Length: 186
Picture 1: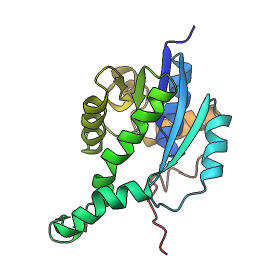
Picture 2: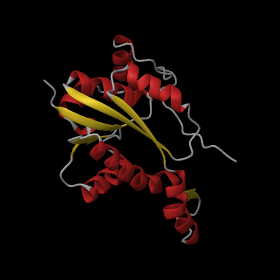
Picture 3: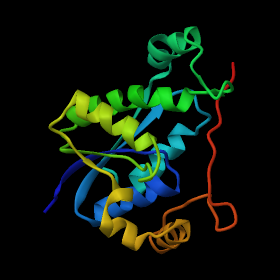
């Protein structure tokens, strides 16, 4: 019997692929959600991977226009940079992504939202504040703050081991465990 349906912010990387499989093993149905905010991505490959790993559905929404029109233009007008040099693109995209994720969750009858943000960073706050503001009735599953998850996965090597044991294809290796976002240029 299912514990409920979760809409997972899914990138196809090590963390969210592990979380997708872990949620299924924990008894949840997973809807994998990917936001296109202009990153370089093989969206078809991410969809194929999510479905092969057991997601009930995959939804990719193009949010580029929303992000530019609603956020980026104003950020440029305000000179929204950190320490006079770091553009806040990632931080500014989170509420737009969260809004779309909530819409997808509601459309698919999800009782839960989930993400792969670590329990130490600001992204978890950005996502969850938006989630709660948009739909306070949907609960958040934040694996990197759950004792059962962090006891099982103490670091990237544990994630890589789990991926190997569960047939999760990943590009990360113990020597190169992190991924980096790339952005398309016109």
